[in-house]
Image 1 (tube, rainbow, N blue to C red):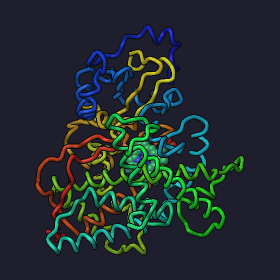
Image 2 (cartoon, rainbow, N blue to C red):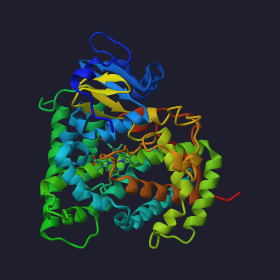
Image 3 (cartoon, rainbow, N blue to C red):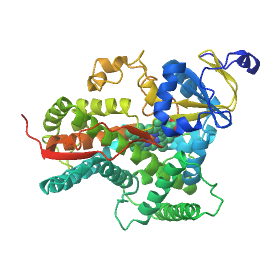
Image 4 (tube, helix red, strand yellow):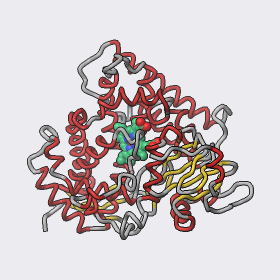
Length: 464
Ligand code: HEM
């Protein structure tokens, strides 16, 4: 791994190409208007390392897998999350895994990692299957009434149910859930503040006051919940119990109550909307590729034939490679986290260009997943890219819906397990079409959402 060059040598490297933009605001408006379109066009015009400005902030977009390895792995400690976007998240999440860096982050990651190991997660497969089964029953009733389904809303709901049951043994989608409603306000505020310009939180506008109340309510409720669980540990095999019981094998160190509160909020946020959009986009692309549904349905009926929410296990899941490949290919074209951002803590050179200390570096899976050098016929939807033997040839830094390097998503196995179970369960029982059958463009907020709800008409599946 080449070291970071000395600052003087780095500053002698040329400036990366890119638009000058408005003298004051730089490219603020075109970027805000349609971030993913802006980034794709920027890559086409300026190449693998491009530079632009948002007001006074210099931003670089790095798109080549070799350079992503440099930022996300080889020099990860020189590229931190001290950015505006992460500051917005920190207001609500505190210092959980998603919003911290350095030694503090490393310690928490070491303690939390075993709880997210695939084998530890196997115990959640049944609650995922139960949620999928209930979803299918609800959809069967709606379909019998001649109703169409809002897949986007249904996926947000089911993934919040799964995340909250796995984490807290509670369904936060229940209307009576105070935590659920405070969370909903916080999620909506974070999303709004990502795309708009807002008063600082200290200014007592009505909206700020509501947001601060929701954060305070959420903190108080989750703190009580964690303290109660700590006082009377029970046998509930959920992630909260695992996080409370986690010990560093060398030092015996454990997470404090305050740290667990931040982790609970982080997991609820990071763990549900991302998976929801991955699934909603999968329903969309499959609706537009009926031949993919045929294979999905055949695989799902054969793999899940004998499975019920009471006996489903990892072997059933292993028999669903096509469902998993469909989700992986969906996340190539529609990565729920369309970009992540870092701050360069030292002058550096990437791809021959100077990256000044203090500038932001954007890594966009949306752009890299369409890089023609790594993805032939990049805009074509083809799940076979993720089936053996082709899958083994994919560069780890050319496909990164879960990011890569030390900050790689801790919940990737959880998400794939959940999404595969839900997609296959639905494909076993229904076929679906899009209404109206028209393209739905993505909108980049915190996650990559569909511009309008993904509305489906379902019918009971028959093998043709
Ligand atoms: C399809 C679903 C998901 C996607 C696309 C996704 C994507 C990501 C990405 C791109 C990151 C890296 C952020 C960065 O580099 O700064 C990340 C981090 C994280 N994700 Fe996920 N995620 C998903 C599901 C989940 C789930 C289900 C959980 C928890 C149950 C989760 C928990 C986290 C946490 C805690 C982090 C911070 C990791 C760290 O920095 O140590 N995610 N996720």
